[in-house]
Image 1: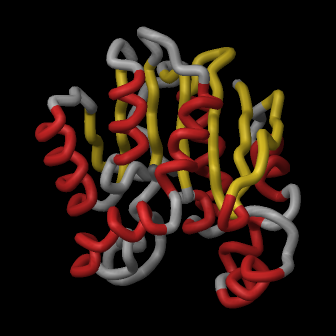
Image 2: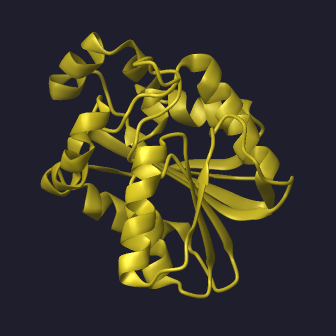
Amino acid sequence: MSESARLHGGHGHGYLPAMGRDGLLPLYDPFTRLVGVRSMHRRLADQAGIAAGHQVLEIGTGTGNLALLVKRRHPQANVVGLDPDPLALGRARRKAARDGLDVQWDLGSAAELPYPDGSVDRVLSALMFHHLDEAVKERTLTEVRRVLRPGGRLHLVDFAGQPHGVFSRWAGRNRRLHGNVGDQVPTRMREAGLTDVAECGRGRLGVGFYRATR
């Protein structure tokens, strides 16, 4: 999952640690289980249509839960998790080693992907996009398009929905969430040159599931 947070979040890192502070990282996995992130991961993985031999990249992988789920389900896929947080990646590596799962963990930015053009079949992003400021969102989607093979797809889940209720109150306090309301996520995908853009459904906590193709 993009379960760590990410770029340009301050806190002396150039990204926002998963729970806001490095010292709270051990609470991250229990917190995500409590709020139902596992079910979001399963749904996103189902929608991605991953096959044997696919090169799968999760941007903002954090502690690696989505990447590990994909590898368990698709052992013949090549799975890579990318995140700017070395502490979160350390946890991801330990979980992979414990479970005997061969996942590649890379330290880096979603806005500057360290992979060749046209080298990835699926890019996954889970609850990461809202952490990015507007310029970084644009660069990230442009980079995603660059690394996808023709016909490759981005599958993304993040906070969305209409500005009311709990989401409205949260969005009102977090300027970055404003950029996720309504059709702004699919609009940005199209502006980055991605095609076949679609919203594939909604989930709990006001999240939307999105798909786009190179």
